[in-house]
Image (cartoon, rainbow, N blue to C red):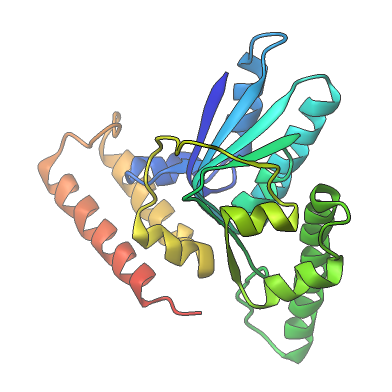
Length: 247
């Protein structure tokens, strides 16, 4: 069975909100469901085309894949375009990782936003360092002795994009697919999400809830014309905010 991990990696509660706005999103619950539907004795192949997203959702996907592997499911990941940020963490949860010769793997340090006094900022720094250790632990299990933890940390410090060949040499990838696989291309705007942040979920959720209150059936498109206009305007604002993000 093949399942496509396309778009942003988000928490289970955020996925329906982003999808309603027409944005691609995958959550841990999607992976759990897909594995549950995987036919017995059949390999589960995860096609990856994602700039990343929520680090904790990525951790959960990694853990779900590892648990399925321990339960006897053969897990294969195929990077077709980009496995960035949290998607690279989910990627190394597979037993075997294959990469299209034109694909990229991107690894970097985790990001957050902190507001408060120096104690709050110090807590955030400690939290980010701890998350970095967890990310490296996932990579380290995959690369074995090909790349040291210190070298992985240096690559993350530099926010490194790895070609298929470089990822193979580093041990993050097990093989290069001889012929490029067809897959959904990554929207260039999504790359900002991999190196910056997801759209403002509070704003999107507020608009989503407001739209639902005006219509009992908002999916796939709200039936009220002025609601369509408001939705397009909100999407334009969100996209403008994404383009303004610089890290």
